Length: 193
Image (cartoon, one colour):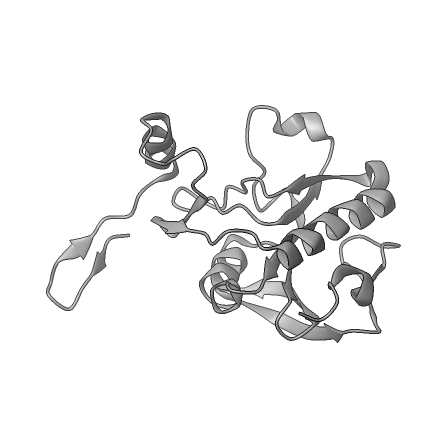
């Protein structure tokens, strides 16, 4: 898994266990927002008000419609593999909730993963999308605050998704894996900046 650089120097990825030991050793500040992806520690930008609003609305609307059919995590870890543990904004997983008391959900548990993107849009569409697809996350949404739409990705194949559609304002978005759940795009997206 080590990568070579142009100078012939190799980088060594950080494993999830090492990442946790770094946190326990106090290497990260308590308020520092970081996540592990593809063996690299990524510093995440602060959550702005539009981002926070969209996450809160998604959580509330999904919670109301999903009921006891699934568990919903907000900005919590999803263990993709030995070198990746991102913290999606919303993760809908198979229940019951208490099955995650001692271990983070994995892609086999994930029914829907949602990232809200403003300053992180290229990353969420790029490296993060590829990591979710490789791990087999069944359905991935990007709430694109910059362009006022929700991108829906399904059918992971390799490091991409075979099916991709964009849902605009004025429309309803429905998770493929959660029949009966319907969310108005206008309710999720905050008003214009």
